[in-house]
Length: 505
Image (cartoon, rainbow, N blue to C red):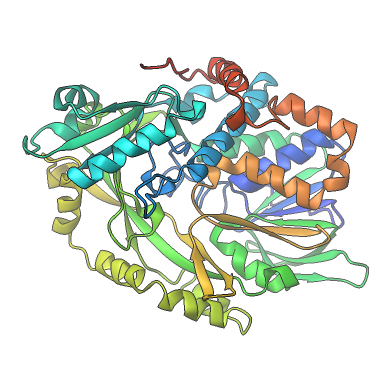
C-alpha cells in the first residue's frame, strides 16, 4: 500500500501529517463535508497505523470508561468523580455513530475485523478497593450511559465471568468486579487502514508513505510551507497549504515546535514506553473472554493500568497482559533516542523541569519497571491470573506514548495524562498531543478541531446537515438524554453487530 510514485500536489487545501487514526478520521470527515477539498497525506513509515494506532502497540480497547478505573478517581471526601468517565462514554458513542455511517455507505466492509463485542470488567481485591469499586458502580449507574453495569462480590459468579482470574486465588481474599456487556474490542489499525483506503479512492486525495516532514514555516502570504523528504529517493519537496493537521503521535511535538505558533510555546513531552506479556497457549486464551482492568500501582501513569485483555487481531483471538511501563527518550517506536533532548527549548524548559520535580514518584516507578526481571513480570501477572505459567507467555514491545507537559501558573509545569488539541488563533494549523483515550474518542476530538479551524464552514447549513447525517446525535448531549442514547445504541449495535445492553436490576 504505497503511493510514492505520485508527486505531491504543490498547493493542496489540506495537509495531514501522520497516517494514524486521527488523520484518517479528520480526512474522511473533511471529504464527506466538502468533497472538492484537495488533501495530501504524509507518513514517514511504509504503512498506515504503524505506530500508536496499531493493535500490537497501544490501541485496542474501545475505551468507553466502563472498566478503566483511572477515569473515576476517588475524591478526598470519599465520593467518586464521574465527569471524565461520562464524557469518554459519550464520545465513544459518537465514534460508533460515525463508523456506522461509514458501514452503511459502504465505505468499509470490515465489521468482523475491526470491532467485536467483549465484556468490559473491573476487578479489585482488598477491603479498601472493594469499597471503592462498589461506590464507583453506584455513582456511574446513576447515569444512563452506564445502564446495565453489573456489580458482584460473589466468588461463584466471578468464576463464571472470569475463570482464569479466580482459579487458584486465596478464598479468604475479598474480591469484587463490575461487568458491562456493551463493551467492545476495537482494532484501530484495521479501522485506520480501511479509512485511508476509502480516502485514496476519492478524487483530490494523495497519500505518500516513506515521506518525512522536516520543515514547517509560514510564508509572507500566510500559507504554510511544508518541507518534505522522500526517504526512498532522498528527494526534497515543498508543499504550500492553507491548513495543516499534525497527527503524528509522539512526533507531533517536534513538528509543533517547528511551526512556532504562540499557542504551542511552552508545551513539552514526557515519553513512556510499554511492553505486553502475550499468551502463546491457545488453551489458556480460550478460557478468557473479557477485558479485565485493575487499579494502577502507586506512582504509575494512568495509561499503565494493568489489564488482562482479550483482543481479536487479524481475525485471531489473542490474550495480553500489561502494559508494563518503561522509559525511552524516543517519541515514537520507530523514532530516535535524540527525540526528547531535541524537544527541549527555552520556551518549555521551565515547565519540563517543574513537571519532573512534581512527578518524582513517576520517575521512580519507571526506573523500577525498567529494572523488572521476567520473574517480576510474572508476579504482576499472577495478581490477575494466579495459575499463570511463564512458558505460556512471551514479551511483546508496545508503542511509545508522549504525555503532555504544559505551563501552569502555580506549579510552573504540569504533566497531563490525556489528549490535547493545540491550534493557531487563525485556525490554520492544529496538532494533537497526548495519548489515551485518543483513538476511541477520535471523532469527538476531530469535531472539536472542526469548530476551532473550520468554524465558518461548520456553521453553514450544508455542513450541519451532513454532520447530522454522519452523526445523528450531533448537537445533542447523549449524557443528558436517555431516550436518544438508547436509540443511538440500538442503531449502531445493529449495523456494527455488537451488543445492546439490557438493564440488570
